[in-house]
Structures are given as C-alpha cells and as structure tokens.
Image 1 (cartoon, chains in turn cyan, red):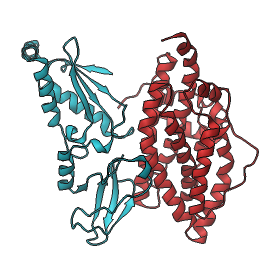
Image 2: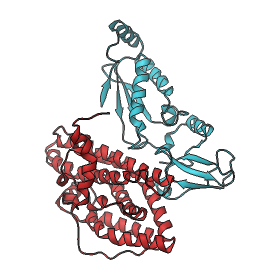
Image 3: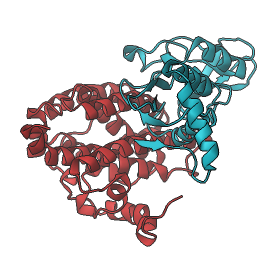
Length: 188
Length: 257
C-alpha cells in the first residue's frame, strides 16, 4: 500500500491553500467530493465507463488522522489497466484538492461483473459492448446461459468466436444475421 | 502473530511459492504463443490466459515475499531465484509442442487449478483464501476455453484426434506429481491451509474423465513414475525458460520501465 501525496515540486503556497481548503470541508463532504472526482475518471480501456460505473471503487472513507482512504479492486488479476487506473485515481484526487489520501487494493470479496451499475450497463450497451448477460452463478459459468443479442441488429442468432477479446474482461462474438463481430462483457 | 503462526510461516512461504510458481511458469510458457497461434482469436485467447496466470503469480509471489521476511518482492522471487528454488510441478514447464499439446496441458492444469483454488477459498489463511477467490473466477474461463478446444480437436478430424491423443499420452505421466502428497502438503492440510490432495485428485479425475469422454479421447493408464518439480527437481526444460525470463533482470539489475 503506498500513500500518494501531492506532486513534488509544487509551490508551497499553493500546497498550503489546498490543505486549508481540504481542512475546511467536513469529512462527509470530502468523501462525497472524492466520489464525484472518481465518477469522472474513465476506465482506460473502456472509456465509456467511469471507475464508479464499473464498480471497482470499493470504499472511500476518512482515517482518524484525516487522510482519505480509497479502496480499489482489480477486475482481473493480470489486467494491465490496474496500475494505470491507480495512477488516474491518484491524479483525480490530487486535482480535486482533497488533501492527503491513500489508495489500497481490495482483493476480497473479489470483484464481480454483477457490480457494474445499471448506469454502467446502459453506457456499455450504448457503446456497442453487450453488458454481462447474466448474474454470476458458479453453477452455470461453464456453459453459455442464453443467447446473446447482437448490439447492432438485436438478432439472437449469434455465436461466440472466442472466450477472450481485446481485454481480459470481454469475449468476442459474431452476429450471424448482420455478420458483424461484437464484444460481450464476461460474467465473472 | 501467535507462536503457531510463526512456526507455520516458513512452510507457508514454500507452499505459496508452489502455487505461485505454477502460474508463473505456465504463464511464461503460454506467452511464447503470442504472434504464433493458429488464428488471431487463439493468439488473444492464450495471451489472456497467460496474463491472468502472471497476475495470479504476482499476488502469490508478493505474499510469499512478505512471509519470508527477507525483503524479497515479487520481482526478486520471479527473476532472481535459481532453478532448484522454483517449486512448480514439472508438467507446466513442458514445451508447448503443437497447438493440440498446449491445449491438452492446459486442460490438465486448468482442471487442477480450478479444484485447488475452489478449496483454497476456504483456507485457514485469509490472504491465500482471498487470492484463490479471485483466481478461481478466472480459472473457470480458462477451463471453458481449453476444454472447448479439446472437444473440437479430439472429436475433430482423424489427424487432430491422433495429435491430441498422443499429446495426452506424452503429458499424462506428469499429472501424477500434482497429487503426490509430501510433508509440506500434509503439513498445510493438517493446519487447514490447503486441501487434502487425494480430495483434489478425485474431483480432478471426474472432471478430466468428463472432458475426455466428450472429446472422444482415451484416458491413458497411470504409469508408476512421478516427477518432482514441486520440490525443486526439474526437467531440463525449466532452465531454458528461466534463461529467457531472467535475462533482463540479471543483465540490468533493478531495471525499471
């Protein structure tokens, strides 16, 4: 766990102003402001979604010493975006001027595609990526649950080309009706 | 930390390395397919599985480093150990061979990892349980991918069937090692950290029988021979993997992006 502070080399006076501004806010207001800042951070690989839409921001709270603490979960253990996401979060919190903070990784319980918000699902669909078709159930994960509709023509005459797409979280499908390939968010 | 926990730490360190090295070495092996797979989709598929495995290895090796308490992080453990210190089973270091052989190896290991991780989610060690809970979700997709391909190849043309059957014969002897219980495995099972390997084997065996039946392949007979990569005695193949994997860190110590 690393504690990020403001970038080194920033003028001390500006720093002081920021800290005073942060101090003036109540803990509750700072947490709310942090959530707003995080809601504006786009996922680097699916820019249609914010990190909050994706459900990977697990908590924002204040610690006894006043510092903010933000918990992030990786979608996949090897997802290369994980570290970029952390940097984006740190930058957004610095820019929001909310004072000291720490970003930690939360592994348990593991992130689930069920946590994508309804707003996130709507944005995914509008972006042309089929949202996770079903709620996660370990029992059914080894087979395809029901036909997946093409995001372009809505035909359910589609097939899975590969369980793995351009990012770890998506599978590659094809529509037999309009012949277009499309991506589908995996249930995990 | 209580006295019992202190005693278990060095053993837990070795056990976590065992679990992590399997993912690390297999991830490195699968990475060799990038740019060489039979189709773009399989290139992406194998690379994605490799990526998940490396991700799991990072979590596990970082944890192992903390348990050891000698200031070695994931990078030191991955890149600066000698061959005899790697504790992965011998199966995962076997060469990729053709696509069929890679798929056979993958089915055998995916099914093993799935049964292992499912049980590790109940581990008495919370950190290991959390890592397993994350990894098990990914592993289900890996097995879905590899067993789909096993069926397509096994129940495919005479040529594809012959190739995967022969890969199965070649790799089968290495599977015995996965379930060969040694002192470390017993110790971990006794302390509730890891499952009994006999239980993992029974579940693995049922899963593999199902996959082989669907792929119309024959299960090879067990031959009484076991390898011991998981206690550091490896086949000649691991050295070549390490030479490639460790070159950069050894030539440029501490290199960073």
